[in-house]
Image 1 (cartoon, rainbow, N blue to C red):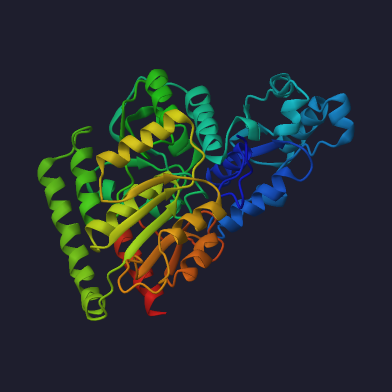
Image 2: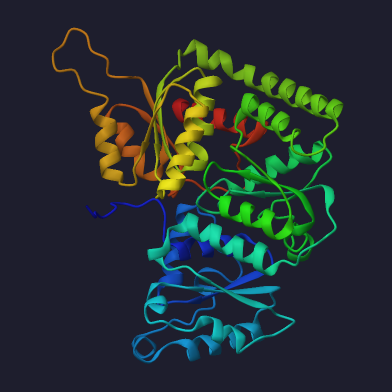
Length: 443
């Protein structure tokens, strides 16, 4: 039976496209939608993505056809052509991407014809279809990068044996995406690899986006998102891929680096040297926090409410490195059956004693968590699974408070924190997660 999603934790596909283009260097989005779509979505992404802000030509500055009643009746293709021409005149970008919304898809505008009408060899224009009835923001991430890398980026017979591309981390909807990518890049650079992250401050359109086809390996840091990109990439450009989880903390990151060495040539002595250096530094810092943790007896029942990219890595970190009892792992993505199966398979392969629940409705999630932590009804003995710590979104703080627990918002929508370069991935990210968890308790 159909139902509505109360307080959703994602947007439509167009929102995912906007978030990607906001973070991708040298690319501008031309928004072919009804009036208000682009601006409203940009506000949601900016605020919910850790107050990440807008790019130069995003948000209220985003080129938009802003179709209204006239275009809905008579068609908006001419209005789109006019908007593309204006954007090409005033914006200095390497690539323009036209993204459609629900209304323009329903009235049947011939977007491809509008794009062909303004063909410009110096300023290429491509189009993608991103109405909400095709998928959510994560689908938007997949479809826009698939279009750019597998339909626009030129093929290259030359391969760089030390170059890798990173996919799977979704700008904005993974609020720590810049910091996580920076930490992964730092580690791979120490191993002698060159890294295209596409979304960090050091990336350029010509140097990283256009060079992606020269990579020897694609690294997919997600159990479900980006599989379309890397599979099509392998078919188009001949680049194999390595699919794994985003590593958080010393245990997971050490395993990630050793697994990676099975897919690309890394000097084994250098690999072990880097791992030893990083783990020594990690535990030298980690041990400084143990007095505070043990003296206060801070051991918790925990739960996570995150997207699929963070669910398993965060849960494993709480279980393996903090020794917490991880009760509930709640994933809020809107997943189709094939992706549900992929996530379930990854969850079963990384068992940490938790129960996996897939749900998108905030009120229903809250009711279930509260039900599993019953209040004392006069019993002499009862297990209410406390003390309780919840890692979720900014929507979930009241749920934790209702059962006397503590919450740290880490997942979209993350409107209660300002995130710039903070990371939870890797060795350094694991230490930052420890800081945030116990600083929340100390406060």
